[in-house]
Image (tube, rainbow, N blue to C red; front, side, top):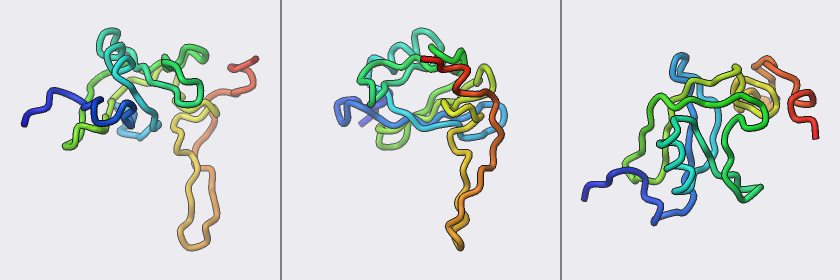
Length: 128
């Protein structure tokens, strides 16, 4: 059976891995529903579904750090997406880092090391 994209009947929310197109860095993991997926394809700007806020999350709507869609892939089970993006503003993480994966765990000692540098100060960007 041929599938023409992700299968939202299988799961209403599907995981999305965002990857920087030029560097290959994994930036973040988020989720999309059908509406977020359709908006992403229509606008060329990545839109997710926020599980905590229970609404569409237009990446960068507060910070200005939007993600321009460069390409989109789905896996063999049609239940996970990979979006390759141009990350505007240099940071995908709401904590101000380029990638949400800025903490590295040493498997032997279980110690955590911060391996990224902050691109922006979240307190300045997300004043509420």
